[in-house]
Image (cartoon, rainbow, N blue to C red; front, side):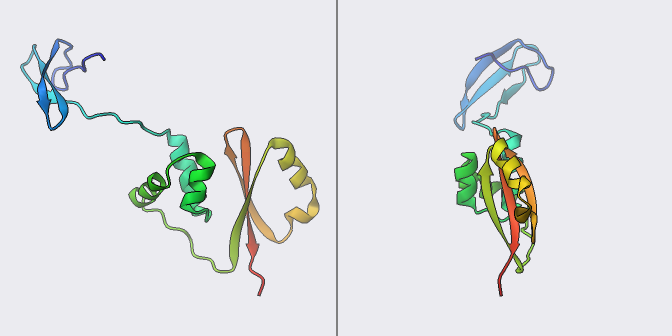
Length: 139
């Protein structure tokens, strides 16, 4: 691993200078500045964060989002908390969803009956599509 540049002078004449709180400490030989660098961690693409939050807003459960996107449900809960996402309350409708490939989606849209009495949104999931449909509760 390449040593980082100095955050003070942006120099690259850096040497390791011990470990503090389980983090590598560095020292810049140009300006004598000591510093540590945060561990980067695994990191998750912004695409998955946005998709997870969209699905959450549409009423998909944390566990179901985990199964669909392959992202931990705990991560999704943390993002919902971090970005203060609230699900709109609407007791007249409930969401259902289907995962389809392109051909299935075209076939679905070609049947007029599928387009009645519901709102829909289609979102991309890699090489597939997720159709979320809101249907009225039957009283």
